[in-house]
Length: 361
Image (cartoon, rainbow, N blue to C red; front, side):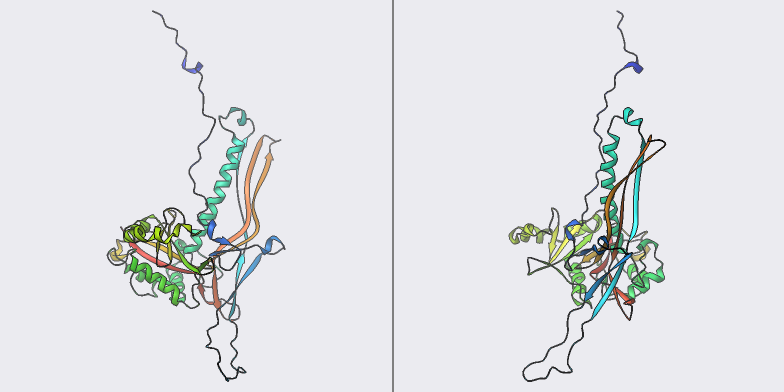
């Protein structure tokens, strides 16, 4: 029996006209961004209202004097305000994609819509990655910021010495030699445990200037601790019973800083950010142990200076045939440093952040 067969090149192919974008997390840090001094990431938008390349943040440290009582005179016992400043210098960031107008006819998906959506996702991912880079960044003068991976060992040692009260190496005491401190970390004593998390918090409480906690509903004080998946798995194991038995009764899920999957302990909210990776190589014990950072965050840990918020841009070329769409912003995300001296750059210390390093398998 002869059966008519449709040639392969004559068969109709129906393509699904919806495209699937790579799953990109929204900005994990949006809840802690704000314009007030209680915000872990303080947004400064002065440059959106007036021209300029840089904007300054100001810190007024708490008063430490005992005061005067009874008939003691005040004259001559005044306490000066300790005020410091930090400069955020904005820069331009852009990204763009193009396509041929003719391909709009040939494409199974809406290229114009695809560009718009993916550019917005790129922006969210870009901000997230810049925040993570800023958490781990190194600065020896409070002005020039280096990504941790590109900083020299000498600069890391200077940064560590300047921040001796706000760097923790697992369960061990601080070591001014950064690489030596990392080399002491092992997977027995220097992993994420309840005790080691409390050491991290204790560093924030005794640091000078103090790492100010985030205030919620006037009297609640919290710190946030961000870590990658490797350390978060350790935290899940270490805090399993505590969170299972205490969190629901404490109604912690009503706190606006919480999201699903967070852990809590001793006034700290532990958050997983998978994009926070381990340090390069195996700098821990024996030169064979992996190490990852955890960041305890209080108020004013980062500054986010904005001169131009994200804006969609368009362009056409070749008599309108080549179409481009992009996004741009004029901004700066950076760790806040406050130093001493006339220009506030002597012995700069990271302001609202304690950096912890922990071993993992």
